[in-house]
Image (tube, rainbow, N blue to C red; front, top):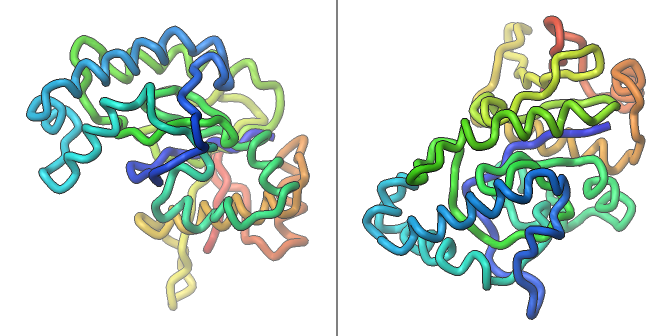
Amino acid sequence: MLLLLPPSETKRDGGAEDSVLSVSGLSYPSLNARRRAAVAALRKLSRNREDAASALKIGPSLHFEIDRNRAITTSAVMPAMDRYTGVLYDALDAASLDGPARAFLAEHVVIASALFGLIAAGDAIPAYRLSHNSRLPELALKAHWREPIARALEEYPGLILDLRSESYVALGPAPRRGNSYFLRVLGEGDDGVTRALNHFNKKGKGEFVRRIAEAGIDHPDVDSLLAWAERAGVRLTAGNAGELNLVV
C-alpha cells in the first residue's frame, strides 16, 4: 500500500548534526536529474531577495525562507515526516509514534514535493520554501514534474491511496486503475448531512494516516482497507468511481 500525502509550506528547523542533502540518497532515483535541476533553479532565484519573494509569494515576515533556500545544499537534514509541520503533520505527529509505526510510515508514505518530486516519509531533507504555485525562472513546475511523477507512480503495483490536494495531484497524477483511489474528507453536520471539508480535512487526513501506521497493516487492496476501517471504527466508505470518502 502506498499513501500519497501533500507537503506543507511550513517546515521545522534543524536536523542531524553534520548532515547535508544527498539527492542520490532519496527514494525514486529516476527523479534525481529533475531534483538537481529544481534545486539549482531555486538557489539561483534566491540570490535576489526581491525576485525570490515575488516568485515564492511571501511577504517580509517570511524572508527567512529565502535564506533557507540559499543554504539548501549545506543545511542539516531530517526525515521528511519530521520536517513538515502544519495541520496535517501536527495531527500525524510522527515524532510521537513508536519504532514500528515510524518504520511503516517510512515504507508506505510518500510525499509529493514541488522541489523533490516524490519522497518517502523517511527521506532526509533540508528546510526549504517552494510551493506548487511558485514560479521558478525557466522551470515550470507542472511541466517539470507531471510526467516523471506519473510514471513513477504507475510503476507501483499495489494499492494507492491519494490524500494530496488537487493542486499537488496536478504536479503528477496517480494512475487511474482499479487499485488507485483519491481520498475525500467529509464532515457530518448536525442535520446528518455530510459535506466536503476545507481546512479541517488536513487534520482528518493526518489522524487517518496515524491510525493506519499504528495498525501497521500493508493492505493489498481496497477491500482489506475498508474491512480494517470498519473494525477500527474509522468511517471510510466507497465514494464515486476511484474515490473513497472519510467522514470525520
